[in-house]
Image 1 (tube, rainbow, N blue to C red):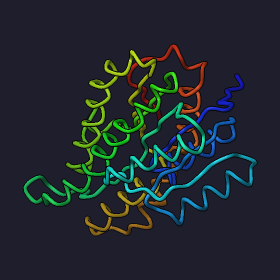
Image 2: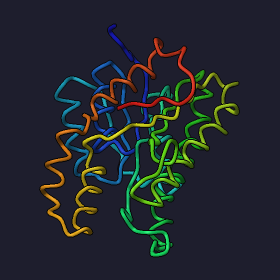
Image 3: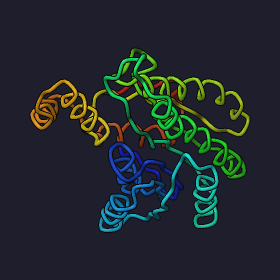
Amino acid sequence: MNIRLSDKVAVITGASTGIGAATAIAYAEAGAKVVMGDVNELDGQETLKVIVKNGGVAKFCCTDVSVETEVADLMRTAKETYGRIDTLVTCAGILEGASVHIEDFEAATFASVLDVNLKGTFFALKHAVPIMGESGGGVILCIASGAGVRGGSSSVAYASSKGGVNGLVMTVESQVASFNIRMHTICPGGLATPLKLGQIAQSAKRDGNDPDAAVANALKSLGDPAGVARVLTFLASDEGAYMRGQVFTR
């Protein structure tokens, strides 16, 4: 099946690396106009170069998703540049406090993770939904995780934030159905992303093991973010209109 997103406008947070970057590239290749938001400008510009080199249309906006005004500006930029928003993908996320027991977990670490992973998703939904409603509807894909939905995590804060994303989607999806907006919680498995590899290295170092060896060993079994990007491309397309609810991937 040749999945196309021709002339659709997509906003992707956390688009500089990992799942977000792979999705931005895949969406552009499928014909979408992509607005990329991320605080990581260096890698964001590199991802943008890949898209442009391949003939795609995209724009990068330096965006801290934990700051509401910056998220609002991102959505406004998409509307002003391309006229609407058809798809929102919330990929922005961090993982801190790997392997730290609850009694030692710092409140500041817990707050910083929830600020990006959960509050950032909330801000994105809050400011994208009105624009999508004006545009006739669309698709919202929120990246959660198996952690916090099916099981635990190496980080108390990460699992809490991803469980929160799942609850947020379950609550909001009925509110936006009248706008012809379809929502999904996406729960990826183990992928070779900077986030995951960083967590593996951090945990190995904490346990007194070689972090480079741990990462090299993990790469033998971790999946490719591009595989999840293909799933997200299908979900954003008209062919994915019959999908409902949570989607679990490798």
